[in-house]
Amino acid sequence: MNIHFKKGMTLTELIIATVLVGIVTLGLVAAEQAVRMSRQSSMRDSQISGQMQATMLVLNRSASLTVGDSANTGIYQYLSSNDMTTCFRQGAGDVNVYTDDVWTCWWVDISSGGNPVLTSCENLNSPVTTCNGQASLREWVTLVFEGSYTQFCSVVDTGGFTITPPNAIITGTKVAYIQLTLQSRHNKDKAAHPIENPDYTLTANISPSGLSR
Image 1 (cartoon, helix red, strand yellow):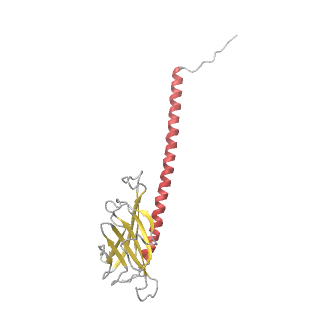
Image 2: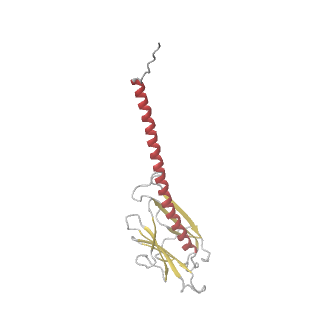
Image 3: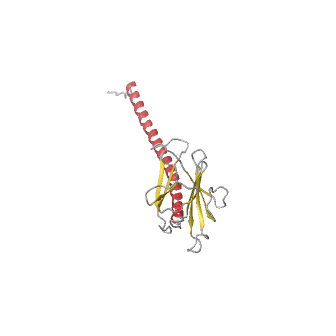
């Protein structure tokens, strides 16, 4: 009569099995963490991208509706240690005069710790240096002014030169285009990182059809 005894696992086999289970577990944890981080990054990217695109769409429209001429461009720019403002005149009545037109202004408080919120106010009788206190005030997106990014709106003349904000309506100058640039990132209090905290930038060059040259 032959009797067969079933052997159990040796200590070496048990150690190897434990190590293999540990490796598989670590792989699963790493994969789960990667999926979680990817999901968070995607949500973050979608949020800031949506804000930027919505802001640029409305800002683009405001600039495109500018009416004026080389003697009186209908573009007002103001820059101080506290405020950065650009206003666009838009036709609202008699096409032969500017006196009954309205203004839309875009403003940031550049004294607010380097992370100013771009704000608009519209249907104004005249340009303003700040939208603060205006009934139509609306906040859009927080900008990040760093490095070469110093302003959200530049006016370029036909000679290719950027016009220095005159703290008044730009006059006596032929405008080639209005350059709009928005820069922001998810965590404004941390330095930009190409993966963890990237900068998002949108740029548009506008040549208003109502601005004769």
